[in-house]
Image (cartoon, rainbow, N blue to C red; front, side, top):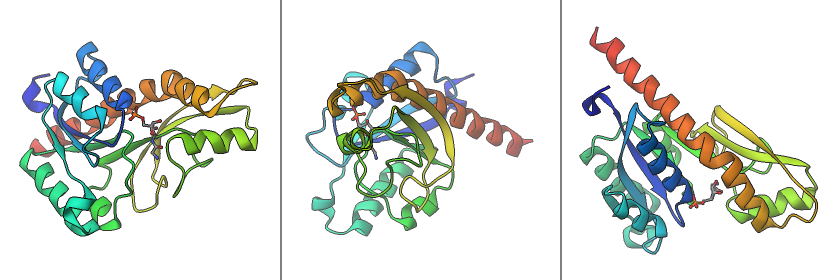
Length: 210
Ligand code: GAR
């Protein structure tokens, strides 16, 4: 497939960007072949994910809520950049800001997110990053995992695309569990789901041309 036909992907990040790295590596390995990583947007100027984007030669932009004042102004700036780059799919990869219903309804089935638990457990408002693993350990679950889902107006409430389970051993800490869930689940299912959705976008585009 020619690069011209590939779906253009924007990845939204806030921190370390290991999931972004998994996407970059998957594109290099040909796991992602129907999409092209075309833009990285961070809401945190200090995110190491920005450096990962630069090293991979992907254009990046920093858009902070502080700079734009309101949620609406913040999202309008993001939309302006997405349109400038002709983005087809948004991948939330450790993006720690909840997008408004106005934003998500503009991109139905065109935003996906990776969440570090088996939804519907340990998800929704307040469940992000290490907190998810702290809650899973406090509950005493023996199996956890990760979920990639479409994003709609309900935090972590959109249709599930892929899930992968991970077993919780004794003496696990939130940090060790986070690493395990990333390594055994997130870094595998996020690239897979991204390819799956990009392939759908490309085939829909072909259908529409007929
Ligand atoms: C990942 O575990 C991701 O699933 C989680 O934050 C981490 C980001 O790591 N996301 C959420 O909790 C969203 N609700 P990364 O920056 O290294 O990819």
